[in-house]
Length: 276
Image (cartoon, rainbow, N blue to C red):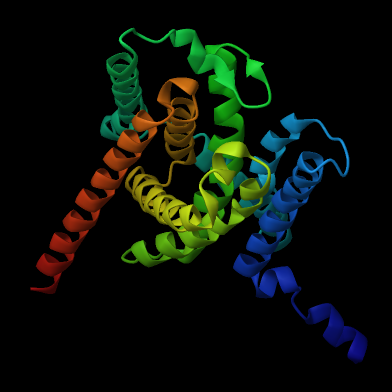
């Protein structure tokens, strides 16, 4: 009898899928982050380019939990959302047009501050790999901090936590947890370390606002992971480039914040109308 009970009892992954997802995502990414921290302090030596592998923690968490709880049907559903191209053109305009516009802003600020236009090839420079070319940099960002993150944050966590009428609160929760997922970066990556402990608070706020924006994009595009991954990849392609260092990075981040505020106001107006 006891044996039968053990067989029928659902696994921990099935009972706590969202919690299990976050544990796995953190464990995978923080393990790589730990190696890079050890490398930074000279305790051991690892290729610094493994930094990009840490982006796949959310994907690993999503695939493990979906495989255990939904099987092939769940993985097929995930793949369909990853390849969902056929969405209203306005969402493609947001996903592609907005980051490109932010790139133009970064170029103009760079030009104004230095008195000369930037070499656009510098968009092909990425941390730990150097100059890999614009095309390769785009593909890198799409594979890692595009799909690598979004398959988990939006494709699994938000998908499970939101309802047809409730998405803002889950997006905020995910944003806070997403910001802490970056915590190892503050112990080995120079631009993160420069922010300091106080800077982490503002970083967390910006990440949470980013979560709200991408959750809005995911929901509005009919749950297209492709749309969200493209926006995320293009935004990182612009914001992480040497051309966007300093003032430009602050300005383009501020523009995203303004977009999120506009979205939240529109949602509040819609909620008031629905309540009448």
